[in-house]
Length: 108
Image 1 (cartoon, helix red, strand yellow):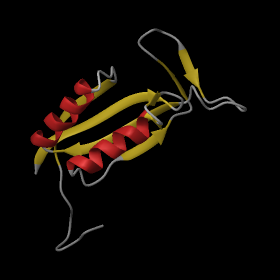
Image 2 (cartoon, helix red, strand yellow; image 1 turned 120 degrees about the horizontal axis):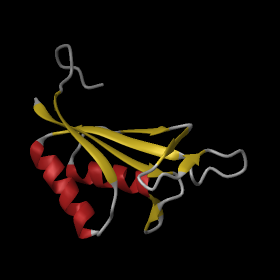
Image 3 (cartoon, one colour; image 1 turned 90 degrees about the vertical axis):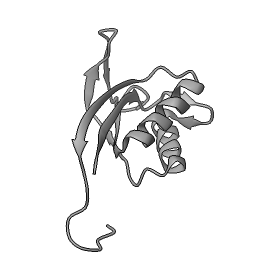
Image 4 (cartoon, rainbow, N blue to C red; image 1 turned 180 degrees about the horizontal axis):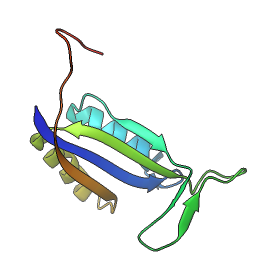
């Protein structure tokens, strides 16, 4: 299947509604029918503003987080429409990819 790898970059403490932004993205992905997504926490990094973000011993709010998923074109359009509807500004990378599952009748 051809589609896109979407990777969204945020911080652990960024929230939308009652959920942190990474969880909100996962919830939207599930609702659209995206089969899977991965959330990865990074040790540190800097944002577009040049500020360094990292995990601190007592507070994880600024820890950088990536949410990555493989989607088809329709799913990408639906997800970006929802993000725009909610008026969220999230840095992302959208890369054309081929994706699938190896083996016959594999569901994992």
